[in-house]
Image (cartoon, rainbow over all chains, first blue to last red; front, side):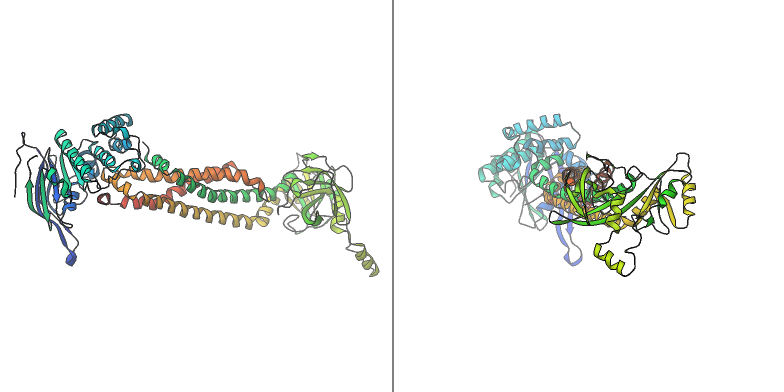
Amino acid sequence: MTTASTPAVAPRPVVEIARLSKTFGTGATKVPALIDIDLTIGTGEVVGLIGPSGSGKSTLLNCIGCITEPESGTIRLDGRAIFDGKWLIGDLRRLRLETIGFIFQFHNLLPFLSAWENVAIVRTLTGESPERAKARAMELLGYLQVDHRADALPSKLSGGEAQRVAIARALANEPRIILADEPTAALDSERAAIVIDLMKQVAIERDAAVIVVTHDEKIFSRLDRMVHLRDGRIVEVVAQTAS
Amino acid sequence: MNLAWRDVQHGLGRFILTCVGLSLLLGVVMGMVGIYRGLVAEALGLVRSAAADAWVVEAGKRGPFAESSRLPRDTRDAIAVHAGVAAAGAVVYQTVEFPHRGTNLRVFIVGAQIGRPGSEVRVEEGRAIVKSRSEVVANRNAGLALGERIRIGRDDFTVVGLTANATSSGGDPVLMVTLRDAQIVQWQFDPSAVRRETARDAPAGGSSDLVSAIIVRMRPDASPDGVIGSITRWKHLTAMTAAQQEEILTRSVIERARRQLGLFAVILLVVSTVVIGLIVYTMTMDKKKAIATLKLIGAPDRVIVSLILQQALAMGLVGFAIGATLIRLAKDYFPRRVVLETSDTAILLGIIIMVCLIASVFGVRSALKIDPASALGG
C-alpha cells in the first residue's frame, strides 16, 4: 500500500542512500543488518523507520548519523557525498555538529547544564561567542515554548519540557537532518503527538528532513512516510497525505 | 561555559567531600616532608647554634653527636692559646631522664662554660645563667616553668630562663647548665658506690673533669685548614670543621630517618596517584552517557579531555590547598618539630599537578573509548 502526498514544491533531497549494506560479526556469527537499502528523504519530510527489533532501524539511523560505518553503498547528506564504500569525510564529528541534529528517547540533556546551556553548548562548540549562543538558545526555547524554564536543570523539567529542550538542542545549529531515536517512547499520547507535530513544523519551517525510529503506533498517522524494515531490508514504504 | 566547572557545581557536595578526603592524604604527605625538615632542623640546630669554626673531640671519634667523646677539660686551655684560635669553650652533652610531675622527663643536657663558645643561648623568657651552679635554662617544650625547681641526679636546679627551638637530634628538649653542673650529672657516682670503690682502693670512675668536645672560634685571618691540621697533629685529638660536623650528623644520625620518611612520602604520593586516578576514572564513568551525548552532537575530543583534566586538576589543587591549610594549623601540635618550607610546598604543588595529569590518563582513555552510539536508545 503506497499513498503519495503531493507537496506544493518538490522537496529537495537531503538524505540520499543507495545500495547501503552493513554486516555485523564475522564467519559463522556474521549477521546482515542492512541489505541494499535505497532511500531518499527530502526537505520538509518526517519519515518513520518502523520495524521489529533487529530489523535494522537503529543501524540505518546510525549509518545516516555517521556513527556506524556501512560496508558498501553510498550516502549523500545535504547534497554532499559522505560515504562511498568508505568515509569520504575526515572529521565526522564536525559533520554531525554542522549537519545533523539528534533527538533521543530519554532526551539525554547534560544533567549539569541548565536548559538554555544545553542548547547553547552546540553553538559554542562551533566557536560562537557565549553571548550569541545564549541569545540563539533563548530564541529556540521561545520557539518551542519552553523559554520560561530556561534556567532549570534537566532534573527539574517535566518529560515534555525536557524533550522540547532536546529538540531545541537538535535545532541549535540549524541542521538539515534531524535524527530522532524513539523520541516519544517516554511520553504519553498527548505529549507524543505534540512532539511529532513540533518536529513536522520544524521540518517544514526550517527546510529540514526528520527521520524518526519508532515503535510508537500512536504517532504513525502523523508521519509523512513510514519505511518498514524487516531483516535488514526495506519491505514497504507507506506515504501518507496530511490529515 | 566551562563544562568542568558546571559539572563540579552540579555535584558540589560530592566534589568537596572528595577534595577533603584527598586533602587529608596530601596533608600527610606534606606532614612527612615537614617532619623530615624538622628532623634536620633539630639535628643541626644544636651544631649551628654553637657557631663553631671547628670542633675538637677525642682522637678517632666522630663525636660529640654521632658517638661519645671524652677529653680532659684542660685540653681547652691548650687549644685556646693555639695559633689562629680566637676563643675556645668546653662542652658536655648528655641525655638524661629525671622524675618530674609524676613522670620521667627526658632531656638533653648541654653543659657549657659561661662566657665561652657554646654557652650562648637566645633566652626568650627569664635570663641566662649567671651563677656557677644550680641554674638551668630550659627549652619550652620541656614543659618547665620559670622559677620551677627540678632535681637532676642528686642536685637541685632552678629554671631561670626559657628558650625556643633548642632540641637534640632526637627531639629531646635542651637544658643548658654550667659545665661543672653537667660534669657532676654525668660523672658523679652515688656515695655508696664511692665508698665501695674507696674500700677497694680504686678511685670511683677515675677523673670526672672531662668534657665531650671543645668548640673553637678562629681569628678572621686564620686558615681553618691550617688550624685544624695543626690541632690534629696532637695525636690524642681529632678536629673537624662545622661543615664536617654537620655532614656527620646528616649522614650518621638522620640519614636513615631521612630515607625512611622520604620513602614513606613517595609511597603516599603513589597512593595519592592511585586514589586520584580511581576518583577521576569513577567520575568519568559516571558521565559516560553525557560524554557519549557530547561526542554524538559533535564535541571534539579536546572538549572531553579538557573536561576530565580540569576536574582532576581542580580536585588536586583544592585538595592540596585544604591539606596545606590543615597541616599548617596542626603542625604545632606534633610532638616533634614540623618545618614547612615554602620551597617544599612549591615543589609538592608541582608534583601534585603532575600526579593529577598522570592519574587522569585512565579516565581520559576510557572517555575517548566511549561509543557515541551508546547515547542512543535507553
